[in-house]
Image (cartoon, rainbow, N blue to C red):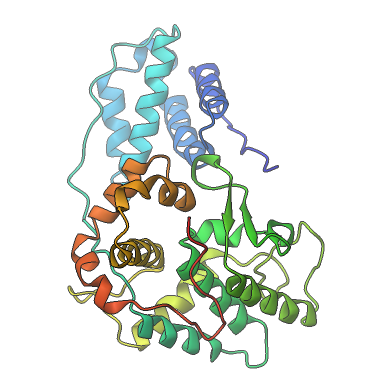
Length: 328
């Protein structure tokens, strides 16, 4: 089991912050991503105040201004965590002044979603297989990983977190142990998908990579777990070199492979005459969303590409033999 990241605090509200983190984790919420935000606020408090009653609007305004170097989305996330923690502290007896309304920032830029076509996926996979070093495991690691994202809709963090023991070759299931908010789930995959993963495992073993059940499934040439930057960098370079662009001229993202999976699945249901609303709960669970409403919004954001999906997507037969995940 993954060990929760410890919270290191020492301000006049340290006890309340520790209780807040424990409360969040006890509620089943993944809090590791919020630790840095709360620690940065705690450091600010140590240098700015001596006791809780001094944490007024002026102090909070200074803290918010100290975050101007951050991207709008990151700044919003930090402020949200801090305001939640302060609200918890006040409700549990911290003698702070009344908490002002949580500040808002300029509207974040809406990123244009993109659905890769079958031919674009083929070109990307073939290009990844040609990457250096020749005759090394790296090209096969990248191509297998990208093909898995296309055919299962996994988040990149979920795919990179896979261990050898998480691939059940007997039942054709992937075990996702730490999805978003710490949720675990089992994903059924088609035999052809499993064949592609097993083919990679043979190459992985032939390259002398660690074979213990706790070893990372996708490994780097350093024999350790493959990191996000080692995937996103080459992927973006390949997409750029192939000239793949959104309608607005931007280079599509790695995360758009997840959009592609969702759109392909729904487009297939439409072609089959299936009532999509009856399948959203299953699709939501497969994607690891917290509710079908999140999945519905996720697809609504792709409405324009969904309209053309039926014409663009046929059954994918990637060079690695991976196909779309088993129907839910």
